Image (cartoon, rainbow, N blue to C red):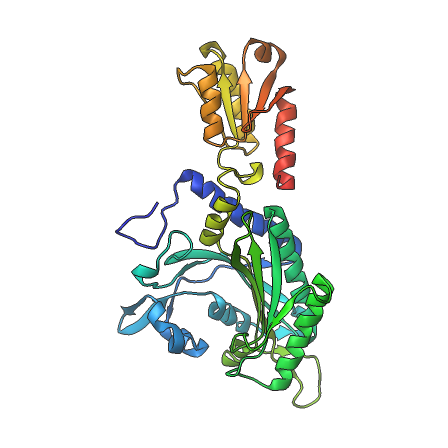
Length: 387
């Protein structure tokens, strides 16, 4: 829901929060497997940080700023400068790289009220934001790993994608030779990932601070969405004087600057929620569904058994409700299907006597009786398989 007292900032009701949290949990599972370290950074900074990063010059009008003891502060609109502070906090060695910092911190951007559009353009949001600090010779492997990450995410969602390499713009900062090497590393990674001819070039469309891979995903209606991204950044490491020890004793080569990779798979969690809501038409797959199971007793005498079954499913981490209304059996089943419960578990005398439930899907397919413990295990497998 939205409210005029906080335009552009969503109020997440319980069932919407279930999906929101599950999306974040899904990405965190990948972080664990893929060697990312989660970090937590402040929501507000002195504006000096944004002057150092360069964002204040180009972006200050889109930031929420305020006075703190005579100094101007701002709510963060992105995470990258804070991550640079964390990298610079310790002496880094070439052996420490790559470092992968992941941050679900809350971001605020002062979008004009007329530009706000549902969940796709908001003022308060979270991203599955991560920054990888690596050596130049590690760019290709890190980009390839990021593309593999992206593929697994969007395959799970049942969405297709197209890759585009955006190269050096006219107003690019930095040495041309460094740009050429970076673009070559990105191209090699894309060739290995998608095959030659499996992607296209957008000449001159890169960011001023580095080349990038634009990932355009298509939903069930073949609409194109710009969600995931992989971008190289040579400028923030310079602005924050980031460096790592090379291990060399040769004068002038003791330290090098890392390359910074900005990457996101979902992009804004709010926007991805909106995209998936339309992509699946409100029929959320079981693993992410906010309404997974509805128990339907055919008579009040079976309420107690339903509560026992509900408890088992709840303890296993599933969203389950019991319809104890006075509606008819047929109405209870139909209501659960309209509300997009993935399963309706019908309970009558036979089920109580046999320690079972009778399964129906939201498509009204009757799958028959199953032991309660077997159903719980089936649910666990669907959750683990993201089915």
